[in-house]
Image 1 (cartoon, rainbow, N blue to C red):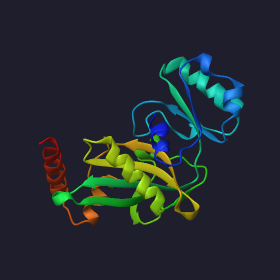
Image 2 (image 1 turned 135 degrees about the vertical axis):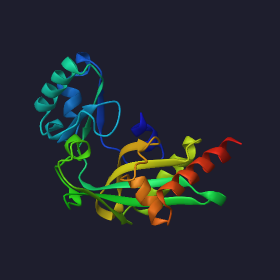
Image 3 (image 1 turned 90 degrees about the vertical axis):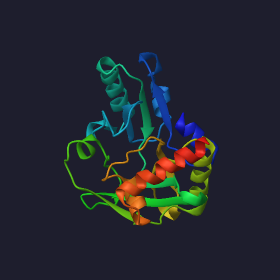
Image 4 (image 1 turned 45 degrees about the horizontal axis):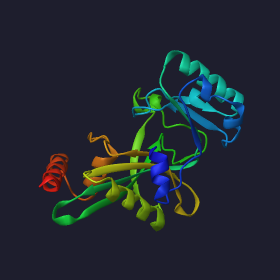
Length: 217
C-alpha cells in the first residue's frame, strides 16, 4: 500500500505483486514482473527474512520460493522487481522555529556504492557480515525530492521520516520503503543527518520531542 500511496505523489515504484496464499500464485501474474525480483515477507523491517536467496532470476524460481515460504512463514509475501542503483536514505525531520531538515544519506556496503544484483539484507544489517558506512550525497533530483516532501507533509503527525530508495541515472529515485518509524540508533542514517546539522545524539532527541509536543498543542 505504501507503493500505491507514493506513486500517487509522482514517486516511481518497482512493479510488485502481493502473495497471501497459494491462490495468488500464477504464472501469468509473475510473468508481468520485470526480473530479477526480490521475494520478501510483507511485514516488519530491518530486512528480517531477507538474504541473498530471496533474489530470483526467473518466474519459476520465484514461484517455488513463494510456495516454500508460505509453507512455513505463514505471512503474506511481496514479490517486487529488483531496482539497481545507489541506495539512498532521504531523511526528513521538523526542526525548531519551523525549519526542515532534509538530508540524503548514501549507504556503502564494504565500500560498494552502486548495487546491481546485491541485496542490503539480513546478513549485513543483523549478522554483521560486512561493513556498512554512510556518506552524505546530493543525488536525488529536485522533482523526486519535492514528491517525497509532499508525502512527508501529507502523512501528518510525523516529525521524522526516512524514505529508502535506489537512485540511478539523472538522479531519478525508485521507492523501496517509507519508514515513519525509522531507527534512531547512534549508527542510523537519521542520526547521521542530524549530525550533519551539528546536533549531538542527545540534542536530536530533544528536537524530536519538542517537535512532537509542538504538533500536539
